[in-house]
Image 1: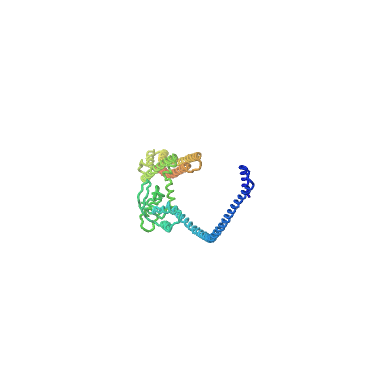
Image 2 (image 1 turned 60 degrees about the vertical axis):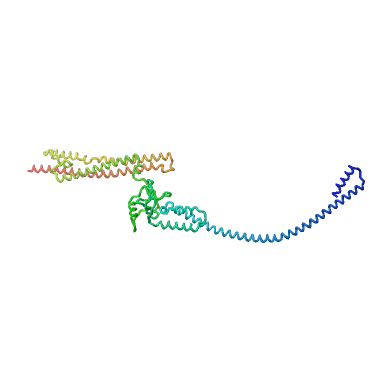
Length: 448
C-alpha cells in the first residue's frame, strides 16, 4: 500500500498533464504497479529467508568454532591462575633471599666504611697504602659482593688486627717539616707510634708519614732511638694511646719562646728586669764569696792587716787610731764597720725593689690583657673564643712572668742579706775583740 499511493498520485498527475485517461487504463496501471510491487516484495522475502538460513548456518559454524576456543580459554585461564600463584610464591621467595642479600650488602658496606674510617689516619696504612682504595671501592659498591671481595674484606680486617699488635720496620717515604721527601726505614709500634732516625712521625691522609715539627721531650726521642737499634727483647717506648691526637696537640702547643711572645711588651720588660736582677744577684753573690774567703784568711793572720778585705781595713784603722784614747779607738772601729757595711750590702736594696716591682708589672700586664679581651668581645662578640685568646694569654702570661721573676729574686735577696749579715757580724765581733784587748792591755799596764 505504501508503494501504491505514490503510483496513484503519479498516475493522477500524469493524467492531468497529458489527457484524462480512462478509468480502466488507470486501474490496469494500478494493478500492474501492485503486481510489480508484490513481485519485488516476494523477491525480497526470498532473499531475506535465504540470508536467514545463511546466517543460521554461519551462527552454527561460529558456535562450533567457539566451543573448542572456550574450552581452550578455560584451560589457559586455569593454567594462568596456577602460574600466577607460582609466580607469587617465587616472588615471595625472591624477596626473602633478596632481603638476606641486601642485609649482607649493608653489613659489608658498613664494615668496609668503618675500617676505611680507621685506616684513613692510621699508621698501618703507611705500610699498606693500597688498602684504602680497596676499602673505598667496597664501601661505595651497591652490588652484591663476590666471594673474592668478601675474602678481601676479611683479609683487610685480619690485617688490621694483626698489625695492631706488631712492632715492625718497613721502608716508606717520609716528609720533612720543610716539605722535602726521602725514603727512610720506619719503625712502627702498632697503630700508636712510628719513628724514623729517632724522630716521631705522624700519618696525614693523602700525604703519608710526616716528621713532627715539635718532637716530644722527656727522653721520648732516646727511647725511640733505642727501639730502632734493638733487635729483640723488651724495650721501653713512649707511645700515643690516642693514635696521634696527643702528638698533634703537642705540635699546636706553644713552646717557651711562644709563651714569652704572648706576654707582649710588658712581658719583655718583666723578663729584662728579671735577667738584670739575676745577673746583679749573681755578681754580688760571687763578690761576697770572694770577700768572705779573704776575711777568713785575715782571721788566721790578725797581726798583718791587708787592705783587700773589710777586716784588714778595720784592723788598719785600729792601728791608725790614737792608742791613748779608748773612746777614739772605739769611734774609729765603729766608723770603719759602718763604712764597710754598705759595701757588703751593695745591690741588695735594688734586688729587693726588682722583686717587688715584677709582680706589679705582671698585674699591669693582666689589666692590659683583660682590656684587649673586652675590646675583642665588644667588636666581635663571644662567638669565637680564639679572638679573645690573645688578651687572655697576655693577662695570664704576664702574671706568671712577674711571679717567676719575683720569687727567685726574693730568694736571692734573702741569701745575699744572710751572707752580708754574717760578714758584718764578723767585723763587729772582731772590732769588739780589738777594743776589749786594748782595754785589757791598758788595765794591765796600770796595775803594773
